[in-house]
Image (spheres, rainbow, N blue to C red):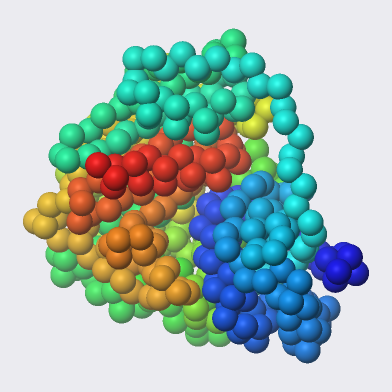
Length: 462
């Protein structure tokens, strides 16, 4: 067994700039389902080319079959952490044992690393953080504290809980190792990849106004031919099935402090004319794709994407504190932190703004979430319609990811992350419930997502 579990295949992958969690969740859910039903071929089919060479199909089957004999079926897989920024670790409970399953993905969301070993409980940290959330309902205070007590000082979470037509706000700030309430629903945070939902909303609005069709190709809005005469349509950009990679080849990812700032018109045109290439037209999360979508929507209406966003979303849904630049926000902007609690710079976007450039508040996002509950908003309804089934119960509309809930109703979800912020929004439209969380700490999406799910599941039990 030790020989089996010492099998380690690790192929270095670049640090993903944001919204990693959804890809890993989709992959890990599929891994568990295929493993439990002995569909080892399906697991092998999810491997990258390099992974397939390192672990051919017969060896993959042998490895997994032996694991099944000694561990049994998988009962649960709980995300623990990202290890060395290259793979995600899951505490995996089998019928007969508990292992750490570590998986890494490449930029096409294919498995390029798999490592399984006995699970070791992390050493307990002497956490002296004080819970001073007495003004909040006890159950909510305990849930929030349990997920945030190990965050660095100066962390802020701004939380909106929408239930039964009413929105309640639960803001917190950690100061001097004490978590206490904060009225920060009007404070501004970067929302990262949640921006993609708004980019898709503008597309849907233009479709509803009969100014565009989802199946229209974007090529006609550029005064040059794309490389190899490749054609791309709007819908495939909005649901991540265009075949585009996560990031453009000519983006300078070494500038981690502000990676998108200098990627402008000349860079995107050079990419489309000289570097464009598509992978398989299946689901592959792409910041490039959604950024290109937003930029092209602006071209289609002879204006900037940011202008469309202001006019068609912020103004329409009365999102008065949402904006497209961190400049001149003063004290309304909550400063972003890394996981060590150090202040980091805000991100600036040019042509790829549609992938992650919006700054907003929980108050504004709650207005947008509540608007989803009214049938008259046809463009919002269009974004929620399934356009592609990813794997199992996971689907995608336009921007939104859809997960099947325990009661059989769809849960809509998106998260986001930039250099100093992590965020999440989950909704159950049929039940008119939603949870929105904005934080000023980067790389904590796993805990922000977990808090979102726990809070929305709490509403379902009432």
